[in-house]
Length: 634
Image 1: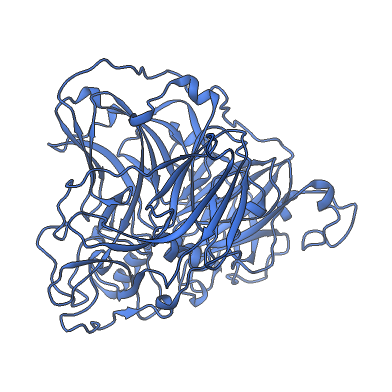
Image 2: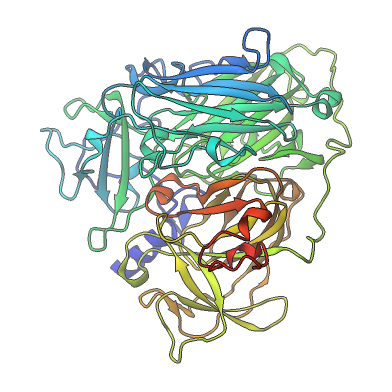
């Protein structure tokens, strides 16, 4: 394979997470390119699959008599075995657990949480980068040669070993005011406490809390700082979905471990290893060869022969999971699975798993119902289909005896759900584009806020200017980049109570799971560009208008639900709509591949009461008190 194809393949697969194969090249298998010790012959590197039982995080019922709406959660170091055949791993945790305790609340009941930072030392991982190779060295344990030296091109990531505990908690998906949202710059040091209040004025759903500290989120979350947060309500109660021991969280992640350079044995030390292109400095997000569920590597779960409910979260930094349920012969049984809900709540009715499996990108959640009553005495596996690392995630061991089934799958779920056929004509529009690495010589993918202009430049391409053909009208529209880094000027201002359509446009490179704080959204339309060559990567602009994108793959039934994270695949133009009706303040939106977020793919936006916004002087309102409110700042 020539160097140019190597580089194109690397850039196209920079997320390193979905199927793991691009242009026929396997990017996810083990590699000897670093010169590190040869791993054991088995793909699981000496760890037995399905040896350990699935761990269930402890549950905090935050509105029980014990807590009465107030709760303290302590960030503390802990040592634990992530597999019984591994030495102990040092982690940063919430209340000593990885994942943290599952917090349960009732909708509409306020909860105050004090997040106390009692961490110490430096971040408990080793961060290294290795030169790009096929297959990637990122999914191979260890990084040193047998004599302890670093092989050619392998480098410790400068400064990571000195990172102190500096943390701020974000409750992902919460509709809460900005002061409680976990602003990335508002990290706290050990001995300090972050005080938050969550109104929980939203339907039953699975949220999750995690660290969100500026520039180091990837390291802090990778070290263990994440947990589930469940909101319950009366509508959910009336459905009598499987509960108690038959409702189980499945928090998915991947990790890598260091090895003893002489023996090659796994040490248990977290290894944050990723690959890069030495010539340009372009990097791929971290991944690892070991799949964890609830903090355990390749566990098993003994289940009754009946329906179960699983609250599934992709907590990985960058790994995509494409989920299938298979039996011991490898036969897929997704017909025994129904999707009851997604990121922000229950669907109107149960949805089938789409053909080819259910893809969950980082931060996405799925509320799954599985009927094990069809498989008495069998063993089933949850697998990451298409992964060229070990595809198995976990094993279900179904009891042999049959028992009465107390649950009947309902035809309808959320009666309060309403599909957005359209949004009010008086709504705001926001335009955001993501770019591949290499734009104007910069090594990382970027996220651009765009403002439409009526005076296009005389010559194209021009850095930061793109022209699009609107699929709705056929008209060419010209946009200029107005911000790309977090601390550039804030350009998006929204009036409370406004509907906003976010136009998310992907100009090539890796897919991006885009997360918008503070509101819940529905996917309105999906279009796809057949040709992106008009976007000149070196120049950083379009040389000619991008042709009108065609209507993309149909919106699946499970994609019609309320969500807060949307996967933007290569060449897509998504329109997602949300109602900014409740909270106010300054919030964030970003790619939820944590490496991309920390490398600059995160931006702020502001929501004001409309009576306030008319007096606020900003780039879209230079101080005229009769300025009309809203319009997304554009």
